[in-house]
Length: 108
Length: 228
Image (cartoon, rainbow over all chains, first blue to last red; front, side, top):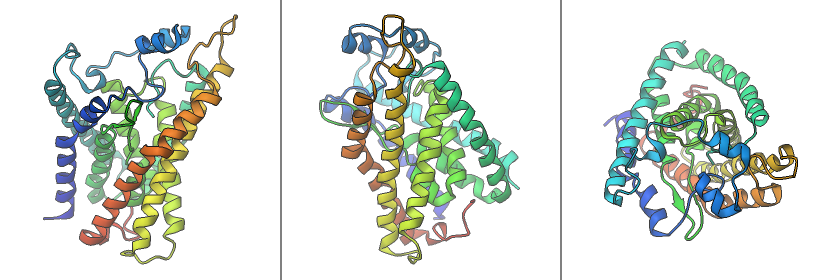
């Protein structure tokens, strides 16, 4: 197999394994990354939500927030894992499409 | 390390967009000079790899999570300028589509993860592996050390950006407007967790892939084959 195909296969394996990035933190009761709290968590941590932060935090409503489909927040981990894998597939595909489009402009 | 919307004030965000503009321009100009159409798939793999490796959140039990960026590996394989473009693509998609990293902070996040990280990693790798044969063990070690140090530099700068916010912006009665934690909290928090755990993840991922490529695709590691 050519190395390029092997590298794509490697990306594929990473996509399939990606729910580990969801399940391990869950298992070890780890919260969000430092400085990436939502406003709810901020309220808990600090007792208030900084004014500017509260205003800006809802500026953008991402179509697949936190790699989970909207309304799936309370679904079991198995569904969330599926959403996570789907997000990885979608994200990787878009990365590839964008780079190939950029490549049209960037190649010498 | 993906700074969300609302943690950095408007002028900080604007300033970092302004800094990134010439960097993105230079990156496209330099990559344009050197990019062969056969190398576009490799660039796409670089962006895809960085995108997906950042989804692997690693927990500190009972604490926070963090992840590798994969940017040092991409920089070693494609050169820092091409890596800058690949990681920028991944970060913009993460922000717009998945809300991972704020849209106002794309400049900041790209500065940390798509500029500082690949450049620091690339030059540390180059320095340590100076004159080492392409299949030598020293290159694997160099890749690991570069991954560890570069991720930590990047985390340190992220912590610095968080930490200066309370000094820059506050209400009349002194309450924080954006990130409420100063340098004394943000810097040790960001640096500590990356020194302790996440830096090692970047180190191991980078070193293992380089080791694998030494065995199976030495040509990818050869100088001169690089996009830049």
